[in-house]
Image (cartoon, rainbow, N blue to C red; front, side):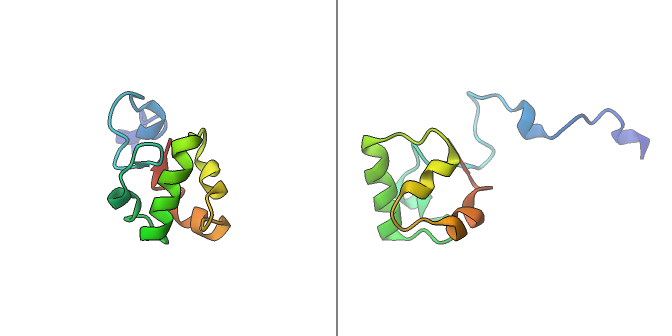
Length: 84
């Protein structure tokens, strides 16, 4: 309908970068408990993520695949739930 004629793009494209991440989990700052809410991430993987980022910050979402235990399949499941 025409009532949506002025809707240009999704909200995320215009999100305030300093604001909340719309419920997304920031893999650089999330706690283990937050990381464990991700599909396929349990205690061990959450610890590995935290261990990895303590020496190497994630620059992109794809970087999480560098963590032992997170491969393409897990990334595909969680990519829409994470941010950096």
